[in-house]
Image 1 (tube, rainbow, N blue to C red):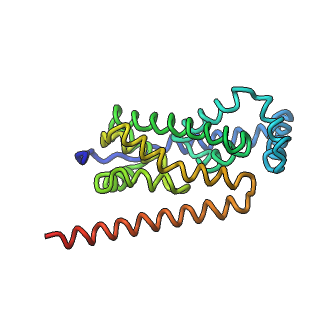
Image 2: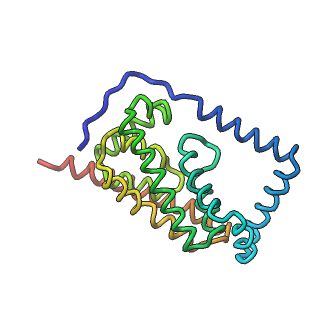
Image 3: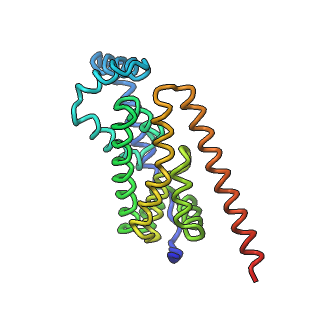
Length: 236
């Protein structure tokens, strides 16, 4: 198991919060004061929520290769901000590009974003990571990785609302084997992507499904931790 990393007390940086607020404010102001932006956003919302696959594909086709690139880059950038939660990006990719191409785009985006976060943690160390996610989150996730390693990554990736980004940073800080980390990431995220691809554009089912997936995966992890601690207690 990786060694525990001791660091001096570091406060979580508020820069990501301020940048996120700035981006949200800029989008809102642009929507109300720039007609082209308002038209584009209204059109996009109308198309993506229409449930009409042909209409969606025609609208998305205008972006060419730039569309998937934007999704991939947004997945990486959102690791540092709070503008767009990962599950929303995943749903948009599936709706926009369909279950097959949307899933491939998501696997690529998550592979690259997770690798990026991992290497930031590995080469910039715990001080930078604590500034990004906060010392409490860093220590809590570090403790779980040290105790349960591979399985911690799988369970956190499986749950839509747990801190996917934090696990990448901390995995790097603890110098968890890269391919072991990526393998656990891909295994953990696969059921969620397949599930979203299966549900497609049915928003009510998606909302309910994501909530239940998160609850069940969290309960399974809690049960595993309880069972493991009980087993260790009874060891001679």
